[in-house]
Length: 362
Image (cartoon, rainbow, N blue to C red; front, side):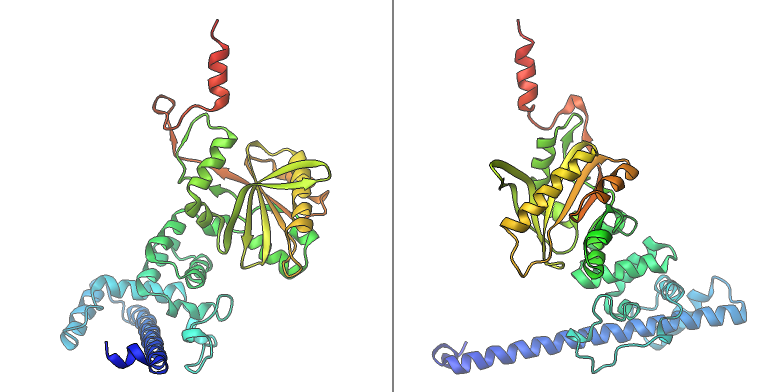
């Protein structure tokens, strides 16, 4: 490091700015190169389909193409028979993509990448090839499902491992499936955003619990696994606290968990119940939502939303209960698949269990 950069702040700031611009240029070039290559893969997949159908080439066609292209481009590793098959699958998953409007090279979007919900189909060319191959494997010809995961990858900059995690949790099938009254209680645009952030069921497979777990143990476990819990809740959730104290008249109440959703710009009150849904829960949650609107929410925030997650629910009962509420509330179930057998308890007994044991002593 030169002496000038140590003593001259103007020069130091200029060098920093030059470095920043260079990195941005490098990244833009990498994204542009990736996009162009994926467009080539798509077009090669289209050509393979056309040539195969026209000339009735058999399964050995991939090996033939691979050998011929490797002779021409000996240093290129992309033309293996397996990769060529994926190029065909890539085209077959999205056969009409390049017939639709595309972003120009002079797009003002960041790094020339399409934004979520804007030219979504074109987004397949802006995530890595490895991500595309994983999506192709998991979505089995379902282009709507595939594009959903492309969008989520682009929105959240998912690594391949994170993408695989969400593919394995059936996020597409669960997204936006909670029973809610959002359409009745929120403006249309806010209602759609709020519905999109719900799931049914929520998957708590990352928790370690005894078979006879209670509500406190479940909530403790969720907070202890806060990072994974936030991932399961979805994009934009920030944890604000547990057992958040509010006053309703002369009564002291405690909210199970309070979150803020940065995409919807609203507080989210979350209540967790280990039993089946009861209509009284909707009234309790609605009261908490109103209290947060009065005591915590600012004028810049959108209306607070309530989410209730139960072990089980009757969706008709839940819908009736929500229709009677003036507050935006959603109800979902949750699933647990990894429980420690009773003979190998992995946590201490609850206070209630200890008291029960002492109560049995004569």
